[in-house]
Image (tube, rainbow, N blue to C red; front, side, top):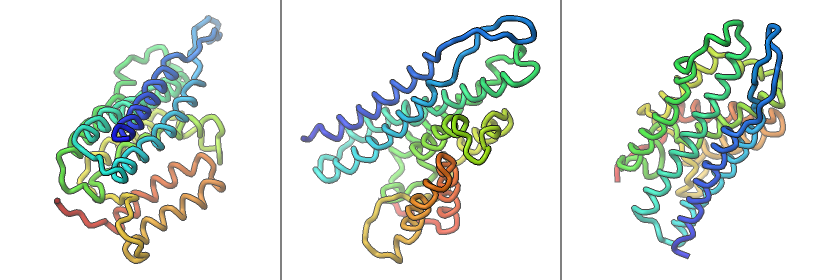
Length: 255
């Protein structure tokens, strides 16, 4: 039983590794562009990677909860959790953004002049995620709430983009096929992960409505928005989360 939280953490890592395989193993097909044949990589497996990020997020949520219930929390579990998170919630969203950028550039007239330098900004996401996780491990102020947006929130946001492109709720797909929109999103996510901004966590230390009303409001907005906005609910909830945290900053104390 003492190893159960670690097993759940490894399930998180397994999902992250499988998501990477899904992104890398996109099927190829031939297409004619300007009278010439080219090999095009289909983006469909990225949707499976998005689903795996969500499953990994569930494992990540329960490993800490079970560790606290079993009273087996320790440095081993903390380090293992960060190592798993840097893959699942750092590398995977970086690769998804890389794939989206690549797809967006395919719609440009000068697509064949695009180099890896144009796509490399997507890889800043795993770099900033790794920095944020390392900082979290040594920052005694983040025991109850967060400073900077946590990596799972960033990963779930990015994982929603391919699904928005696929199902196109409210005709939003074209926004995630615009290179400049993607560059702005990458810059904002990198900043928010390491910014000294107190962020709300969903850890309920008491049942007091007064003390927890931002958390309850966020949960209520989530429940309402999912059936109304479909996959577009994820960016909406993320924006609400940031706005609520800035408007009603949680108390941050060192332990």
